[in-house]
Length: 330
Ligand SMILES: NC(=O)c1ccc[n+]([C@@H]2O[C@H](COP(=O)([O-])OP(=O)(O)OC[C@H]3O[C@@H](n4cnc5c(N)ncnc54)[C@H](O)[C@@H]3O)[C@@H](O)[C@H]2O)c1
Image 1 (tube, helix red, strand yellow):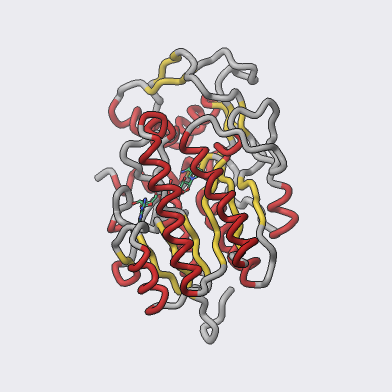
Image 2 (tube, helix red, strand yellow):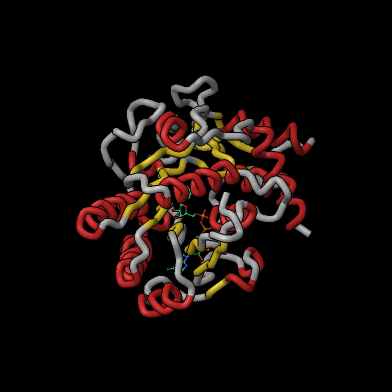
């Protein structure tokens, strides 16, 4: 925890989005000073304290340089990106421009102003369709969509920038971010929404059945298995990563997941148990590109940074998400 005499300032890009807004709260709770850059293309203005929000696009290198000069930062946590796999298949140029081009603008501004620590939001999508699970960090890059490819490109760029300029970084490859701040201060409100738990809540609210894509996978109940990582545990991984970099640790890459997978039907049952309501759903054909199981091997993160999931139970994930959804559905 940072003491008040030596408060470190962290720039959070994409801090008005789902994972960013949760992390901003936890950074502040841990005693960090935070400044957020977000263009609000998908983020929500109300998700961030207006005193720390700077609204502009990361492509604007000069605005970033001016910000770093006015408010010197010890490290950057870089969440800002477009996140829809399906859209990236239709509009790859937009994904490469925003996820790679804007990242390069950010890194250029950091190098020009001497900011040399960065935590990058990467994804399990860098592994593509791995044949076995759990997945460890030493599997090769094998993305199967422009979204995953854009994250691979940034990871590789960061490798070269470290080599050339000493830009030390941690790439955190998240599995399925889920849940909400336990105090209900921040949570998931994507628009459009593509993530399972909010879609199950929507099915409850509208009565329209949610599609379960495939029930004939080689998994215990035939539906896809994923590793749901609570957003507060994910935020904690960012804080540990920042602390490691500020403490002099070398660049690194870590999976962030619990190591336990839950099937779609198990998540539906958990939602029904927490909410006391039936989730209308129907079995639909498999979706192209969905691997049967994606579960993280997160031993490296646990042993290197001392991270542990504290809210790894499905009921914790669902109940915090439901609490947030209830608060924001009125
Ligand atoms: N949600 C998940 O399960 C998940 C899984 C793996 C990786 N990730 C990664 O985590 C990060 C955050 O995801 P999220 O779910 O919070 O997404 P989100 O869409 O809620 O947040 C992204 C934020 O970045 C902002 N933004 C986008 N482009 C910008 C730009 N050029 N300039 C300034 N701001 C910009 C958006 O307005 C938004 O507030 C992303 O990089 C995503 O790829 C998310």
